[in-house]
Amino acid sequence: MSTQLAKQISKRAAVAARAVANLSEAKKNQVLQRMADAIRAAKSTILAVNEKDMAAGKEKGLSEAMLDRLQLNDERIEGMASAIEEIIELSDPVGERKHFETRPNGIQVDKMRIPLGVICMIYEARPNVTADAGALCFKSGNAVILRCGREAIETSKAIADALHQALRDSELPEDVITVVPSPDRDLMTELLKQDKYIDLVIPRGGEGLIHFVSDNSKIPVIQHYKGVCHLYIDKDADLDKALNILLNGKTQRTGVCNALEGLVVHQDIAPKFLPVAAKALAEKNVVIHSDNASASYFDSPDVIAEDAFGEEYLALEIAVRTVKDFDQALDHIHHFGSGHTEVIVTENKEAADRFIREVDSAVTMANASSRFSDGGQLGLGAEIGISTSKLHAYGPMGLQALTTEKFVVTGTGQIRE
Image 1 (cartoon, rainbow, N blue to C red):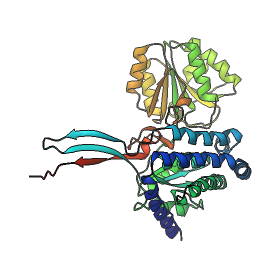
Image 2 (cartoon, rainbow, N blue to C red):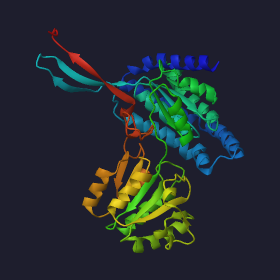
Image 3 (tube, helix red, strand yellow):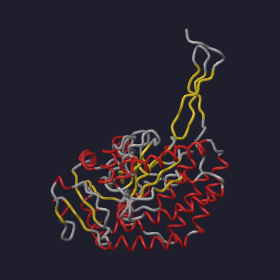
Image 4 (cartoon, helix red, strand yellow):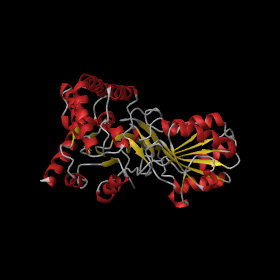
């Protein structure tokens, strides 16, 4: 039964993908505006359904981070609609053509951007992904299959109903955006085998989910296992900037992948910075896990072993380490980071440039909060996910990351000798 349903869903999405692949930018933008309007119009319905999902989630004992991702309110629903309108303003990459080379025999070689085809999104308690992924895939000319966890499935269906209304009003097939009707794992496993119809799988969720998808998929997978983001306070840092960036990165919203999980401090500035940081973090009720060198600056920290760094807390917790120099800071980040986002605070341009050049992560920052590591904040519009796998996209994935390039060759009758 699962095999048959997975094949049916995938095949219908592949047919629908052809209907959207060659729509004009004007037509796609018209449909996207209808989607944004439909989400606003369905706000009360979506909130009522989400309230039931939240109640069920609390009963099941979901973590605070998971509940935060699951919960919708007026502001977050408006955020979903506004994100779609931001996508409208973005340039459509489909059909972009650039000259590659003119060969000695006169043939002209160009490259043109085309949709990937069918994207399968697998996610947990993130109902906003339904709108974000649906809109991004549509604008980039793809169909999308959305498989969410049981925690958010009813909310996701309610959001999809609004998107489907916009598609029907535009005389387009609803299969352009499909919400898998059941969170059954056997059905998900069968979807991962549909390599004849699905072109890319993007999982968003905990490490367990992403490992499961990667281990069982016959389809290429964009991976992002976790977000262990560090803030390195260099010896030449501005302390006011450092403190503000630390507090924003750690406490503004804890249950997201671009929140700070590690603080690395140069020993030369530690006596000035850590007492101030300790006071500010204590006021925010942040739990401190520290090495021995940093422990004395905090009130009853949890002193951890060398191999205990690198945790993704997704809570008001942070690991703190004092390092002897810049090189040791880089070694720590390379060893314990997850390739997501790393930040340096320094007034030394040479140090900043070296950090940006040598740190191997999808996003590197100098003197800015890790919370900006987000597609919307970086000008991509709503993101479909963050890639740390270097497959064909690295970092927040916007419209262009949902396309690929094909070669276009134009001749005047040339034949190969």
